[in-house]
Image 1 (cartoon, rainbow, N blue to C red):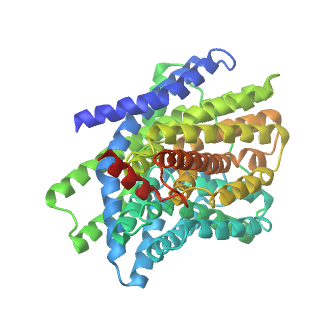
Image 2 (image 1 turned 60 degrees about the vertical axis):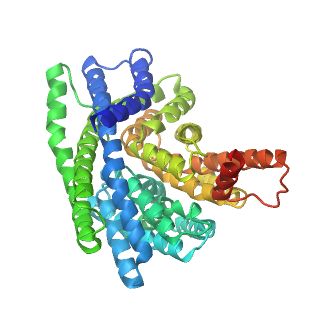
Image 3 (image 1 turned 90 degrees about the vertical axis):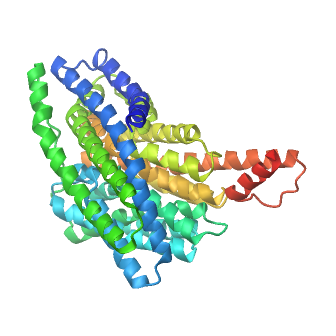
Length: 511
C-alpha cells in the first residue's frame, strides 16, 4: 500500500507542478505577490499534491469497487420502483457530499446555500434515475442528450439572465472528486451485468446525464425565486506577512474541511454498509480493504480542499484582477490557455476517468491521449472565457454553437466516445476549477469593470463544454486509424465496428 501511495503522489506531483510553476513565475514577474501569500500558495500546492495522492489511491481501493458492486446489483434488480428510489437517494446523497458545490453555493447569496444545494441534489438524483434506466433499457445516449439539451436551451430563454451562467456552472461542479468515481463505477457495473454488444458504450454516460439535471433544476429555481438582488461574495485576500500567519490560516481552516468531508462521506459509508448487509457482496477481507480506502479518501480530500481553498482562491483572484487592470489585459487570453492546458490534469477525478477509459478499452484509448484531448479542450475554453470577460459577450453565443457541434458529432463518432466525451465535460470541472479558475475569472472581471454574475460565472460551463468536442475529435481520429489498419489487412469495411470488436480483431491478428 505504501508503494502504491508513493506512486500516486509522484503522479500527482507531475500533474500539479506545471500550474504551480506558472503561478509562481507570474508572482515574481507580472503580478508580484506578498511573500506571505506566496508561501501560502506553495504550502497549498504541497497539500494539494499529497492530497491528490491519497485520494487517487482511496478511489481505487474503495470508491470504484463500491460503485461497481452497486451497479452490478442494479442490473439484477427486478423491482423498478425500488431501483428508482435507491438511484434517486444515492444521487442526492453524493451530490450533497460534493465539496465543489459548497464553493459555488457560497458565491450566490441571493439564494440560501441550503436551497441551492438541495435544488442541485434533486436534479442529480432525478437524472441518475434517468441514466440508470437508460442503461437498463438500452436507450441511445446521443438521443437522450439531444432531447435534454434542447430542453435546457428552451428553458434558458425564460430563466433570469443572472441565473443562466450559475445554472450551467452548477452542472459542472456537481461532478467532482466524490461523485465521479462512484458514477463511473456504477456505469461499469451496470453495463457489465447487462452485457451485450453495447457494454462498452453503456459504461459511460452517467456523469453526462447527471450534469444536465442541476442545470435544469437551477434554472427552474431562478424562475421561481426571480431574484432582483442577485450578487456574489467578493473574494477576501487574506493579509499574511509571516510564516506564523500562514500556519494560522491553514490550522484555522483544516478542521472546517475535515468536518465537511466527514459529513460528506458518512452518508455514503452508511449506504454502503446497508448495501453490504443486504447483498453480502464483499468478504471480510475486502471490507477491511475498502475501509482503509475510505480513510485514504478522507485524508486526501481534507488535504486537497484545505490546500486549494486556502492557498489557491486568493492567489487566483489577485492575479486575475491585477492583469485585467493593467495595460496588458489582453494577455489574459493566452495566459488563460496556458493555465487551462495544465490545470485540468490536476483535477482528481480526471485521473479516475482516464484510468477507467484505458481499462474499459483494454488500452486502445490511452491515458496520455485522454489527457492531451482534455488539456486542449480546457485551454480553448479558458481562452473563450477570458474573451467573454474582456468583451462582455453573452455566454449563449458560445454555448449554443458549442453544444450544437458536439451533439451533431455524436452521429459520426464510435458510440463509446459519445459517453466518454460527455462524461469528460463534467469530470474536467472539479475543485481546481471552482477554487482557482472561478476566482481568477472573478478577479479579471472586477479588473475590467464587468458584470461578475453574467461574465465571470460561466467559466465552469465553458470548461465543461469544449472537451465534448475535443474528445469526439479524438474518437474520429481513432476510428479512421482503425479503418486504415483494417483496410491494409484487406478487410472490406461497411461500417466502423464497435471498440470491443476492434479489440477482438487485434487479438486474433496477433495470434
